[in-house]
Amino acid sequence: MTSTTSKPNDLSANWMPFSGNRFFKANPRMIVKGEGCTFTTSDGKTLVDGLSGLWCCGAGHGRKEITEAVSRQMVDLDYAPGFQVGHPLAFELASRIAALAPGDLDHVFFVNSGSEAADTAIKMARGYWRVKGEAQRTKVIGRAKAYHGVNFGGMSVGGISGNRKMFGAGIDADHLPHTLLAENAFSRGLPDKGIELADELENIVALHDPSTIAAVIIEPFSGSAGVIVPPKGYMQRIREICDKYGFLLIFDEVISGFGRTGQMFGAQTMGVTPDIINAAKAISNGVIPLGAVIASHRIYQTFMDNGGADYAIEFPHGYTYSGHPVACAAGLATLDIFENDDLLGKCRTLIPYFEDAIHALKGLPHVEDIRNFGLAGAVQVTDMPGLPGKRAFEIFQKCWDLGAYVRCGGNTLQFAPAFIAQKSDIDRLFSIVADALKAQA
Ligand code: PXG
Image (cartoon, rainbow, N blue to C red):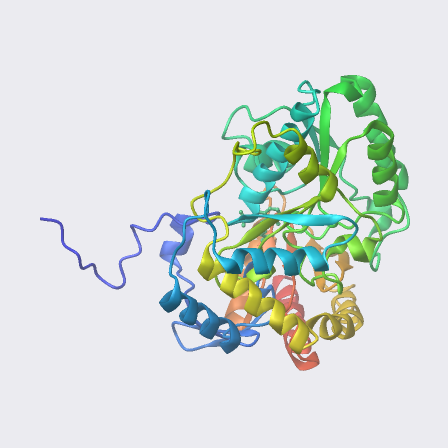
């Protein structure tokens, strides 16, 4: 008989995601409580949360409005099937999100994660062209250094080689270059140089022929790769080229969406309207998994107009948990907090303070670039010779020991505090990062 109990300190069974399992299990770092913009560790230490969890908890941890809405929903309706039947919360949340989205993006397809959003948006784009009679438009153009999650579509358009090399062939994709230019080092916000990198899309078009391309997928800023911010005018240029050839433009706003740039969507901050926006993470403040693909009226209507018999399924896609009632309750409560607490206003107030604080690290040992956009930023550090990523990893550990949770990825440290953070939280975060950098010297 299998035992149902296990030793509380047995860490072996959990195969952790995107983690050095061997290192962690030898040196565990365990979080047991979250409150506001702090975490408490299993050994009783308080950490300032420098990344809103994993870019999700903009309203801070332990929001009673959300936990109470979730508990109530679990009692009233714990689950409802979403295929061929519905429940009211999914419709209410979709309407509220549609009202917040830019342009004519007014239809919301619910998923459970950013990875599912990426694959859903890609299938939507390819399906769109098929129902329009251009089924040969299958290729999706991503960018080097992009992150669109880990499922096969998102992996294929993603541009972080470490996330791709193990897994073999993906879907039909090609990649624009990234926009990380040495001459833009230490830029604040959108850098000045590099708009011409958008014109590389014309070269991709020339190589493949526009008739083979369904869509272009881009993060308003690349989060995982270390807050790589597009140059001034770049997104406008990409939009123009997409319009020239009819390509659908997908903004992956899993990180930039729901407030991180000071507006509800990065599209609004950038002043560029895509055809599809992907969202997840902060949409439910990270409390319950939830994601959304927000499509334009034109895309939705194209599926409806070409859907065949009136009882037929127009888009054969969806997940058991699409529009889960408990996730929708969390999403609605999160939107209430955005409104009631003026989260966007709070974020906009904090952005210039955060920008000054992160750029004040310039000149400290090993700092080779600092980038920021909205309430997100990264410090790029010099790698140790022959040991890629080790310095950033050591600084991450040192920050933990000194009282801050920060994220490391490759040769960058990444920061995305909660929108409700106080200036004192930002001060504490960056004073710890400064000490950790100096300790490396
Ligand atoms: N798109 C983007 C732009 C993302 O940032 C995903 C899709 C995938 O979302 P899911 O929910 O499937 O993980 C993401 C996720 C980091 C970090 O440290 C970033 C993500 C996830 C975990 C860590 O930068 N982004």
